[in-house]
Length: 258
Ligand code: XBP
Image (cartoon, rainbow, N blue to C red; front, side, top):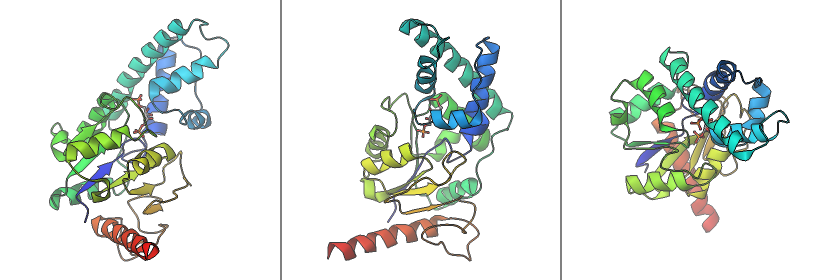
């Protein structure tokens, strides 16, 4: 029933926003003598803007002390963003960004079941590479049938481009896949491409409205707190549970179509 599982990266595989990108942005500001520091709540607000460089440019454009000239602001954003990505890779390389609970188990389960997986993110490829190389080793790409990042999909989530490209690469129809996402923009991107979504709440999107999602819950690492309820005898959300969610949605659809 499911022919591929599609993974979002930031917030879904790991808490990369709070513990990675935010920390790295602030260290980059400091290293470049830029007088700004982002607080955790402020970064949460900025996450409404997809893309690290775009997010930074958005923040810069609202600061009185920022350069007045648009080209200067863009150059500053470019410099800070490049350094942020280097620092992010260092943080990841030190092992400071663990995978979220249940992620490693589900990745291994898919590999054992020979279920193809895809990475579907509008983050830069270098950041994805750093994170997955750290956790899956230098041959990490071999775990995935497709890896689509910001370089291939410049129209960032919530635009569905990144999902459409992944489906094209996998030669699958949307309903043959399931996406795992944590944030409203990612959920919208998947749904606009017709891909059913399972939502794991993350630090910045703890109660993320998941209208139309197959299911939503606190973490893949536990079966409590999921809506619809998950098998309480299972210690985590595994492939069986994901298939059950998919079947449930399909039978609901049939009933409403009658
Ligand atoms: C996550 C993002 C990214 C990251 C930072 O997108 O919005 O911008 O916050 O990464 P997705 P970059 O949900 O598609 O994973 O600095 O590389 O943009």
